[in-house]
Image (tube, rainbow, N blue to C red):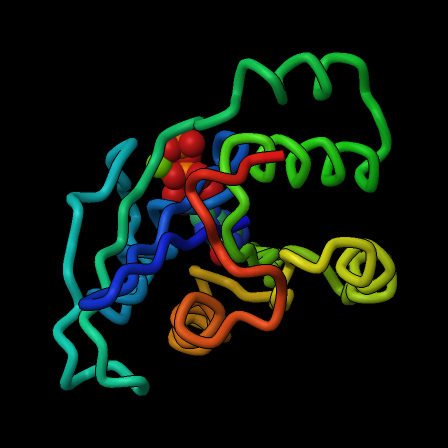
Length: 168
Ligand code: GTP
Ligand code: MG
């Protein structure tokens, strides 16, 4: 999942998630328009200039390596269902900060069927989730779209507005 912290001059996109889902690969595929064979744990923090973004707002992308992994590691070990795992991840993100989220299903090249049917009811449960998207850093499928949805989520959120003082 990807979360966003808006400010008046730019949008900041954070990529907290479980380990090895392809966060760094997604950023590198976006930047170089090809799938990297070798990836560092973290991509350098980058700023996409305003004139190449659809909303004309500079966008900082901040990578994380294995964020929330201590929380999620327990979940993985306990072999909970995918849905449950996802719910814990979402609640973990919202606990840290109430910011717009989008759910990203990377590595779509490895599966034959879409998991949108499973994801949509979850999305409808949380107003902070602005959208969900299936993509592949490997096939470059939906990569620029994903970052566009991300930027749109922070600039025009439909859910509750971000407020740093209110973290109830
Ligand atoms: P951490 O920083 O360790 O949390 O991992 P990460 O989420 O940044 O994942 P990373 O980009 O390092 O990718 C993990 C592995 O998944 C690597 O072996 C990538 O080559 C592979 N990978 C990433 N994206 C895709 C994809 O779209 N399709 C496939 N088949 N493999 C992918
Ligand atoms: Mg990484």
